[in-house]
Amino acid sequence: MTAVESPPPPPARASLPPVFAATRARLGLVAALFALAAVGWWWTAQQMRGMDNGPWTGLGSFSWFIGVWVVMMAAMMFPSVAPTVALYSRMSTGQSRLAPLLFPAGYLLTWAGAGAVVFAVGAAVSRFAGDGLAWRHAGRPLAGITLLLAALYELTPFKDACLGKCRSPLGLLLGSWRGGRLGAVRMGAKNGAWCVGCCWALMASLFALGVMSVIWMAIVAGLIAVEKTLPWRRVATYGTASILVALGVLLLVAPAAIPGLTIPGNDLTPMMAPMGS
Image 1 (tube, helix red, strand yellow):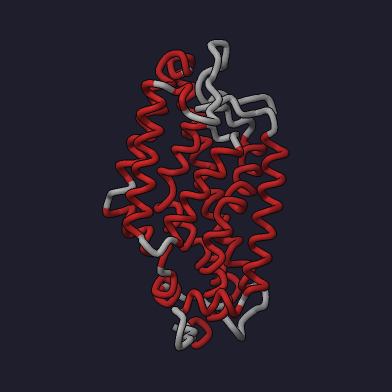
Image 2 (image 1 turned 90 degrees about the horizontal axis):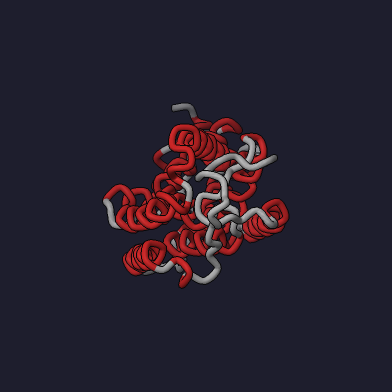
């Protein structure tokens, strides 16, 4: 490994863990990420206005969906990933000034790839299942089962491992350090991959509740932030699992009892069918 690729010694404070010390030392960067997230929330809300058709809302055209998806991921994820970006920024002192910005760009690149997979799966389901997976047919039980499976995933070792990487980024950064601008993108993308592994089931739950709903988008983003930042890790994961179980059961037996849920009408298009762009 060349000298430029060698990780610098981890930042330290006598009274604070490295990630908190880095966050305090890079408040400007953290504030910028929160500001970008706020703009993302505003822009996403504008784009999604009037488009929430409840569970399995159509995804629109590929270009429209990917654009909204990337901004939505920035809005949902930047607040919880900000401490990691701050830690990377502090560790990369002396490298390119663009590195702290290229790291979250790589992070979003991974999520963009995940969005492309989501769109491909949705298009395939719509093509082969057609009206059979509309809400009035199998759409409702599928939504409930999706939430129950997401709750189960919360308790798996793989979820625990991915969440551990997200909650303790110092070891991840030291173990995969790459110097330079390309290295910043690669490290951000790797961090994004662990985040996808941690959050994919919660994102599936968002589709089962209404991916075009800003309300459910905010709830899922809140659950993700709690899991990544709450000191009591088990409380966070088991609490999230309990919420998903409750929502899944209600979707199966009494969807009207779920506040903020848009229940599709019988005249809606099949599950995940593309909307007009």
